[in-house]
Image: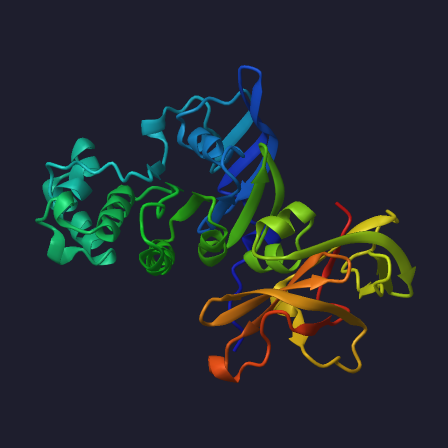
Length: 374
């Protein structure tokens, strides 16, 4: 049975729900968003990812109507949003602080927006009950926000945001206040809720793991520009630049002179070191200097020189990071560069043979890394 693939961005007949068209936002002399064009589709869980100050929250505030656009247009379902005030948009925003009313119960917090709209009493009750069930808060409905945990408060804020059935829900660092374990659990809850409601979610985060876990697509941003917009697996496995490769996950990057050899590239990167053999995923434009990026989990480490591999580097173990399920080895190569290799800890600690100051061989296949020109 073929699994149904959700990829409206690949369908030329699919109309985007949100369209940024040449959007620029300036604050005085400072350009926060620079000529940005982007399509987001209905039912997507879309992540805006980047370091602090890259413009992701400004983008979200323009979508919500809290910031005006300097140039360009934002369309929602084909309608220009510029003249529509925030309270008239089919958009809801959930803040990092959750902004719950401390004097109201969980039930009343969720019902607040519906009451403001003057909805009939029985309709409000049915909708709030539905939201309580969706977020598994039924047994806490009479409690006040201070009587429940941080994770439960997060779910109340989510239920309140979804109660008015917005087309689009904006989440600004929604899990920032939660501890790591609870955050990971809540990420999966968010995905389940997003899928069951069919609401389009746009999340702003600087946490790359969070973006990679929850999102159907990720937009990596830097200084008000989109650097790459793609699915999480493509962002990780096929970054389009050193910036994206370095920003997402752990990576080894070497740069050197590229010499084409058939379908492969020989990268001359350090005197006295053998060249690295790589296979370009797309034709290189002929730039002489290129970067080679490889993830630590794609680098094998051994005490004996492996046979039959093109890429073998010698070095000495100077550090070991033990994370329970994996270990990361920091290896100093002959030219002084530090290279990381990662192994899954499938055996007990006492049975692992590599330790500090050991001479080791790092090896990887011709297709394990990515060749990047920028």
